[in-house]
Image (cartoon, rainbow, N blue to C red; front, side, top):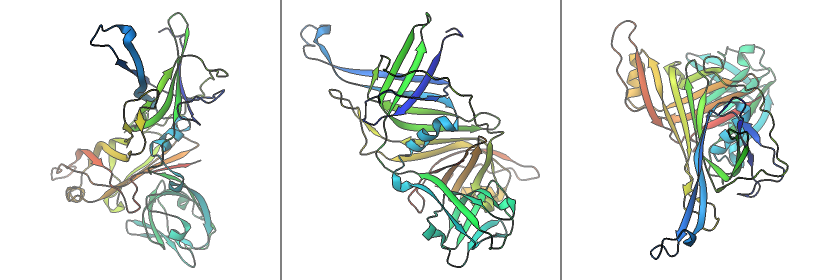
Length: 390
């Protein structure tokens, strides 16, 4: 491939599964690799007689593969939401105002206390959500915070700022823009892969009826947030669509772990802030697959479920932390990152770490601890929350 040759990948949501919308405008995606292949299934009616090629006919086809990328929030936001199969009841977008909200620092706990008629549960808040405060007189109390646990009158939170005591009385706004996993029917997409042959001949490949099978994100200290997305679809079309044109991709706004990941918290807060040198979050949308027959899509969406896996390396130098992890304490994880215009929160509310290594006793002892865990469902029946606030 020469420097003058172009390649791009874009996607668009389908109205009818397996049908490319008319005059499509594709959302371009920054990618580092594309490995998507068509699988064609044949049947041979006279195979045992003469094995003639003319005796084969196509019974169905499908596409399956992986797309490597560096995370740009604008480009990948809707796909991150889609892998959760988030239905309407699991999308929370609301705000409320109150003068009955106070901040109380009690030991290692940051408490948001309600008074008067204010009821946090009635307002729609849930443990695991990310919320945005504005209107406090102390600027440290304004920002985005994770609800670690809650009652109707109190939130325990952690977030991008270290909050300070503040009495009720200010007109505080609480904003929620939050997605949680559910089993809603998945949406379907067309992915368009454009590239040029060595002689400059343009090639258009359209992968139709695609579902998001999994999304993997890698957070490594000092590097750009990268990922791999797996898709499964109906078929491939190789003729340019009427009304479709390529648009230049805007300058990338990539997330850097060193620069843009604000907080990576291991909760409860009594454990303190742990340092992950590397963290992988993998969301599996276990849509069941089957062979296609006569053009029918090669997958079923009835039996799917969501699974979330964590893998990484955590630094610690504290025997108390080791004892808690060894005892199988239920933990949660809150991660905040910001590309300058949108803050993204990822929350995993319930998991246990398996094997842990005991640190050597003595001054400056430390351990780099490989961890693996599968998320458990929290008290609301959820595995993971995503939050986008602009």
